[in-house]
Length: 480
Image (cartoon, rainbow, N blue to C red; front, top):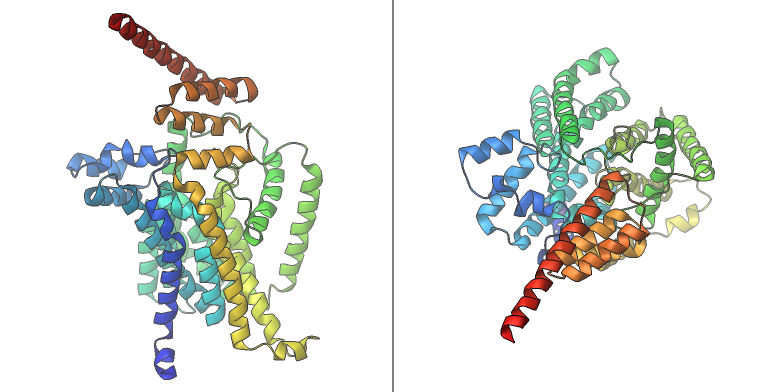
């Protein structure tokens, strides 16, 4: 029996990961759509409602919600054909994609670390960690799931000691699919270049030519996406007017907040409002912290090139979301979907190395720790994450629970007030929606764009409420 398990170890380890990923997020199959990009991608998107040459052309050429992601929109077309606007089908597809990504993470990390334990534990944490909830449960995050799947496939094809020309071809193919899913894949060629330089010990002259075609593809998509972000109202928010150095200072604090979220994921939210003023003490402490991390990595640069690659990849994967090129939010949980792999792999590797150090002062104690005990510790960590994930994901069950939870964290955030008011309006609670919007106009400090939206909503809803009241009064008079 043990021989059979050893021969098929990869299969049963992968199978357990798939079950784990499906179990932890299966409750979301009963969740509704949320009014946060879901209407634009699905309910109001004519491109996915029927098969026609015009729609296929539109999918291939048009921008949807400030993103050029034709493969993502095509996936919605396929699903709309199968189950229309039943949210369960879209949720289940997201869950399946996440489970597949977990298996790909296992295969990739196992290969790079040469440790089945590191690979499996990293993948398990990737699958069940609460920070992944937004990426999996939010249907509109499909583009991130698809892009990540193809990016992981590209890395599996290319990250070998001696990649063949066929491997290079597969890498380019998967990169193209990733780029057509989401422009975030533009960071993959720099990561591959660093892999060749740091791990394979290639010279720049040897490594750079291999990334010319992938780099050119990424540049084209980057130009397309930049145009999309500037061609749709709201793509680049006017309030994001901080100078570059100020943004860099804010990023220093956000990066540490991301690290805290990975190790203590108990205060997650659909939106965050990180402070941008009065933060200089935190910035200085954060800079000192990152300098210490950098010096530590510099000391092991020759003996642990994978750690250097991991650190560089972590920042590259987050770079598009750090607002050097302005986007509409400063931080989100979904931005950690791929970067968390690196942090988890490093943490698990440290634990494994501690158990291997022969001259450790704790060697007598460590000798007593068996593989079963190590497995038990892993079980405790995974079970804890699974519990937190199942507990928090119910926040995403529908728009009202989503925005109510967010407002409990940031009651004066204008965008959250708007979304909550729109939710009430969609439920037919017109008077309540108008009351929320009017109070938001008095109590919040929205930027120009949000202020105009809030005023327009208030005017339109006031007019609609007046009309309904007049109609009701006339009905009463005629009835009398």
